Image (cartoon, rainbow over all chains, first blue to last red):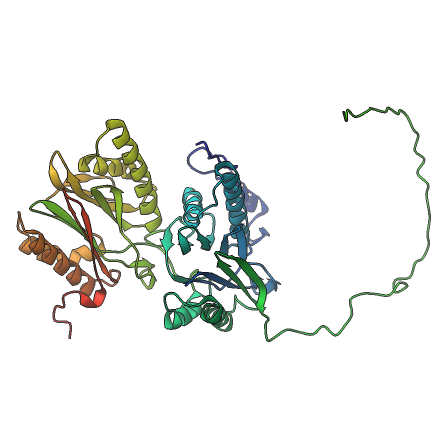
Length: 278
Length: 217
């Protein structure tokens, strides 16, 4: 294709080398002895809504590693293009890298074709890539943006299914968030007044009802005039106040002895090359 | 939560569905419900479009794994478009069905999607073809498919007449969809119907509450 992507289309079928290697390693270490790292799942609530002159995307900011909160201010709304952003749920690394790849490819496409990317194109590229991996890439994405054809939200599933919808919630807190959206969504809402509040409330419902979601709420408003990425839109009510200081005064750790060793360097050879600046 | 819902039969979102296509005098009607489910207990979309236009007068409806079906129909759309440019004429409905069949059969180990292809061409007029999940291709005057079709085999066999008029065929198709949706839990939403004739393509959308009712009290 003339408008090529950075990512070369690989040989058909997919590459299981790493999975085989991991199995061999686990067998070699013995039963129950392998400490294979668990993929970091974002246990998330993300939501998106199409409104009168734009799109509002929202997400919580908690990233969990089993029962520990690994990141309290994780950014789940990823930049794709100046007019397109993507919320990601599922395996954190997969959503991060998939969206980065998509963003790079779309930038190259814009430069080559001289056109701004459309949301439907981004969704198609994601669909093609995720289908090729047959669900091995655990990325559940809400792709939203505004282009010359209007404002759109697409859901892209990990197996490569694509669906265009007016409102959407995904992640482990999706049932709670969907309840709020189903109740209060109206077509062609006013962005500033209603839509932001609706998305905020949907994410909040997910945070309250799901253990895997929590902390702050990020909101991203995309209109034809520009993007307003509000991070955080609302901070958690349960913020802790660190009382202790973690900076230690010099002298806290006693110095027992000090030794300075000079490094003797011998100048062996010196050349000067003039640069052609004419 | 999404992770807890098992997806035993189909990978990810499935279109446990009701789809059908019926020939009438001068054209063909292809119809489907609009529900996409995950694991038989969560409706992931109430308004999904299962009627995909693969060429000007050829539509196909999808059943099975949504991801697989979308990938196959995209490929088919491209191949048919290319084929019609090379032949300098619109493709035959049989060609469209064959393209889908080749994709389904050659990748039968990995794919879980079945199709009904229906359309109009200059050579044979209105036709209906079924491409099953394993890649079988057969031509029939009318055909029903998807999980909801099991509940309407009796109705379809009893009520179908060859050479119906457009109105009779619309009524037959609507009734069949309503009956299947009424009994199958993974079919529902709105009824999408597309009427394909030599002159063009007409979409009819019937919201769920406006479908005919059969002893629903």
